[in-house]
Length: 248
Image (tube, rainbow, N blue to C red; front, side, top):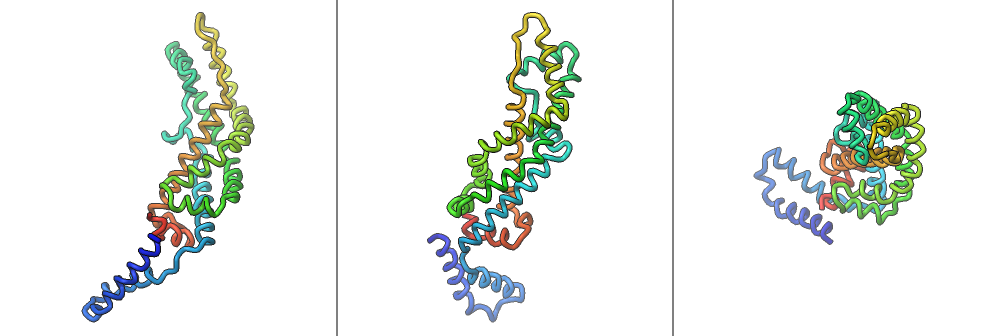
């Protein structure tokens, strides 16, 4: 009803203003024409909302995944850079105190390289989830918060992403020798007399942080599409996200 009220309001304004057209400038007439165009535009169809939301999600995922999967995508981005595992931060501090900071730095770099490698495989998983989205989901996302689509993906894909991402992360960490560096760090720390032995799940930690970082970047792209007309690169995105319904 709110959406239809906005349309009718535009039409009313247009008719009231018709009597004043003779006194309008060229620019004012052009502005008036745009009002009429907007007033006569048909309401969004179910098919348009469905197509527009799927396209927006795929665009956000593609941009976000491509950005994090490039060299430095995680490491050089303070928002998503994966730090030394917080559960064993005392290991980092102790090693730096005894002059082994370079080993820690090398480990953090390879940990992020592993996440960048794994992120290359994430896009198909997200796209498969988007294809399962219902029209009810689409309308809820359209009318929702600025990160509603990202939260939808987080709710519906985190479990499966973790299962699928974990072996990819593990292989990537092995490939980039992050696990070797981690083993060296833990072994060095555990050899220090009287310290509490540590051995947390590196793959689980890296998987969780890599997925979180990916969602951060997807949310950023979603906000752009919702707020910045320039980011709406296709006609369906312009129509759906430029509609009064999308603006609340």
